[in-house]
Length: 462
Image 1 (cartoon, rainbow, N blue to C red):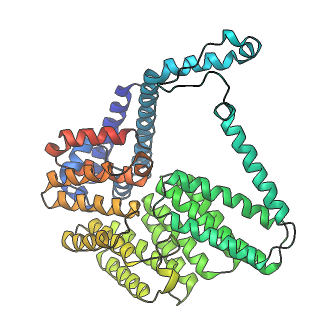
Image 2 (tube, rainbow, N blue to C red; image 1 turned 135 degrees about the vertical axis):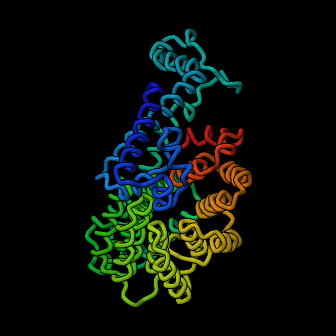
Image 3 (cartoon, rainbow, N blue to C red; image 1 turned 60 degrees about the horizontal axis):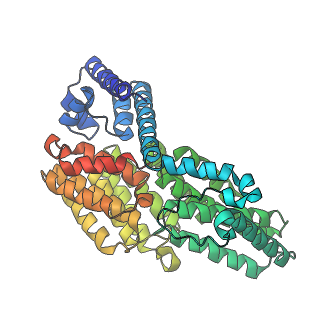
């Protein structure tokens, strides 16, 4: 991928924005004010020095009535940019490991000859580790295959142990498993979560295939809805929107079949988050209100979560009074929750989460003082391992610092936040939000060594 091609696409996109703006008779200040940005950002975008995020382009496309032209232009640029970064990463990997990998391929290709003539084998590189050459280590050679066999044995045992009808005790055990996955979403990496949830969903599907009683089937279907909702949540975090949409649809279908309005409300609230992070704020509001209607007058995790995401979407659209109304509704619903509904889990909702959501809404509105107050409280209440809400709250704090004229502090806070997360936990919406915050910095701080280092780190994060 030629970097010049990416630069050309970036400049062409900026010219397209400038042309649309002038055709509507608007100044750069006009556009900045209406899409909640700054004049310097709009100027940098139009000159091809900056691209910003998809939210910016969705809002500009709507404001300038571009019929999707600006959005598709941004998506084309992002596709080329990601492809270029992947090619750079692969080239770097090959430069570092190519010789080792090639040697290993030669060794593996000559496996048959080695078996026939052990003395002629070329030893694989040990990378500094001592190897006992007196014997072969089967576990080293075929560990993945052995683990497949072990898991196959476990599944056979499970099947043998559950040949009879699905019992109440068995269903209780599965509900504990689902609850465990809900808690794990607070502090486990996305990759770990996806593997665990997918494995247990496979077994739940097999259990449903055993023709359980009608009451057992309803409980199992409700669990499938919850687990599918968790898949949607995790995929949204890593910014795989297409897959998240599909799992949201599966979760919604299962929730309808289960006939539980509280599960259905929670699933709809999860789906609303996917639309929020896709910058489709109107659909976010529609789904959030649907979640509220489904639950009726009952307070539940789904209804509080829906009110909070509705507030964030309304704030993104600049609808101040409606934002405050939605936040007030979330406060009232939270005050009515009790027991497990307040737990640190995807199936719970707490004041810490509401303060994060409130702070994000006020950050979107550009109201710095209430945003900072909510962020302070969110960080005070945040569980030590709850890295997603913690990181996103601190990124909102960096945005507020920039707006207050403390851009140097914003850069340092941003660097500390990203630096405290391992690569698996930086990916997705955290990395994307960090790029946005970097793009909002004034030129001096944006060109600082700290900012350059951050961009280099984020360039290799999906």
